[in-house]
Image 1 (spheres, one colour):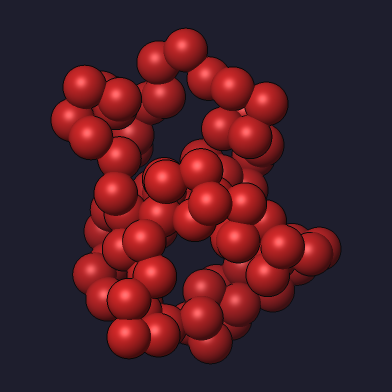
Image 2 (cartoon, rainbow, N blue to C red; image 1 turned 90 degrees about the vertical axis):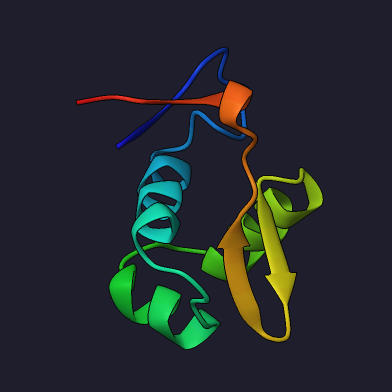
Length: 77
């Protein structure tokens, strides 16, 4: 599990924590997989776009990657 230090309005969202944990465990995830995993989340496309614009997630070749720098995250137990 990744713990965010000094969370912002965006990173306080429960979906953000769930998504970064998921992306930390899975590489090169496509949007269809994210939607399948988090099917109960409303406005998932908009949320992901906000995370990309903030620089927490990277989209490349229709794949999603976690881009948090190591000093922005701390691995918890």
